[in-house]
Amino acid sequence: MVMQGVSWVRLNEAVAKRLAELLAERSMTQYQLFLKSGVPKSTIANLMHEKYDSVKLRVLHELCQGLDISLPAFFDSSYFEECNLEP
Image (tube, rainbow, N blue to C red):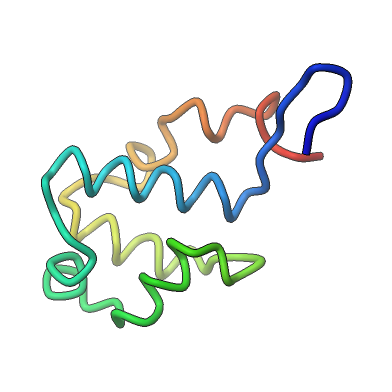
């Protein structure tokens, strides 16, 4: 969505972008994340393709464990700054 020169993202899009960024930084595939986190492959794929309107915190926590980061580290991204998220 673009309004008055501002480009906002939906929260599920921000999660997908951050997850893709973290996977790329680690040269990790979705399958490898499934193996390390225990989150079903279909759930990871659905997150990456923005199929869910919302994401359970428990799922994000498990993904973070598989990525060897904390929840605060996951959200430490400009994607989650209030000014970038769709109101």
